[in-house]
Image 1 (cartoon, rainbow, N blue to C red):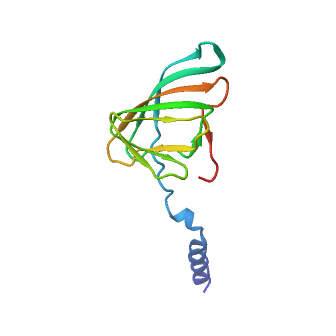
Image 2 (image 1 turned 90 degrees about the horizontal axis):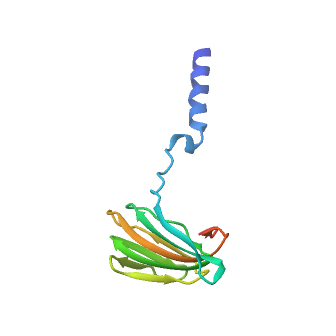
Image 3 (image 1 turned 120 degrees about the vertical axis):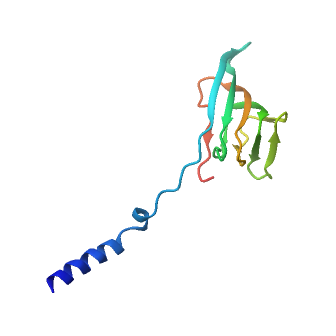
Length: 138
């Protein structure tokens, strides 16, 4: 009888375990890989700086909605990037396409394809401020 009670207690404990302990965590999307070419003070405006970087977006990668303390220009060099401004339909940018993101625009970039993508960004941002502000709850 004692053996049955112990076995029943072990089975009941296993059934009461949280579902998260039994279900593997979802895989995180791969991250963008940035390669900064330069950052330099903006001529005649010491409060801002200009920078250029190359961004490689593995398949399935993306970022959350965010905004920048300045202007950003993007040119897709390879693959496709889905660019979304909050509240507007997504735009698919292909190699050779470019766009301009004005200061404070809430946006995101994603590679929704099964092939890598690469683009370059030129930015004119306020000096000393974080490059991006994540938008909570998006």
